[in-house]
Amino acid sequence: MRGVGWDASHGEFLVEDYYYLSKLGKLLREKGIKVNQVEDFDELEEYDVIVFNYPEEEFEKKEVERIEKWLSEGKRIIFAAYYQDMDKTATNINKVLSELKIPLRINNDVVIDSKNNLGDEMFPLCKYNGYTVVMPCTSSLIVAGGNALVLSSGITKPKKRKNPIVGAMYKNGGELVVLGTCVFWDNYSLDLVDNKILAFDLLTGKRIK
Image (tube, rainbow, N blue to C red; front, side):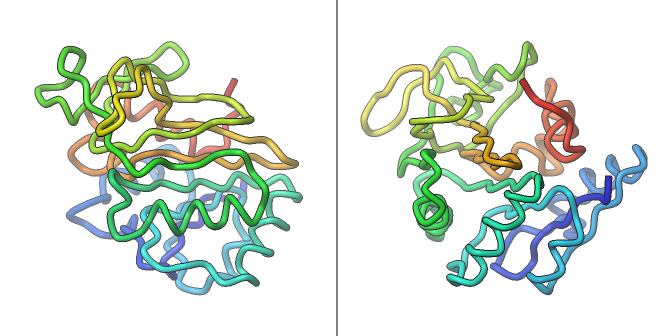
């Protein structure tokens, strides 16, 4: 594996930010996984796993075309948003998904769970591949094709959809992963329940059922 390329060209939360995500970078290095913060979009092609974590800036047409090419080459592309389309991150991601004709979308909402949470209804405990993970401040997803990865037992606001999906994968040559929150692997959440397992599985390119 050629490691993880963490995009830094669209206003993202960055893996080298000591306050927010330094634990994640340390975890990967301890496991022998290379992770680099990449300022030049074109250089992302050097990596097998590519992360867009809270992209506040729109993607250009040529960038969407590159993402499509990387998927066709078998790479894993990860998009992570935040609740209620904060800073238009969901809008920016949904535009890419639409242009690529990938049947996943991020809703403009928030998932809450008054019963199954980690001390706050906006910290819903969710299920991932037999593990329990907390997905703070997450939007729900529309999954018209592909596989659900992370499931909540809560509801969405304002539309009160029950048992929403908050993480999904679509396979098209490579794998495109969409997550309703970008903070499940931050310095606060990474050590909670089984979040390290989810983060590690996503970023190592591990085959996910």
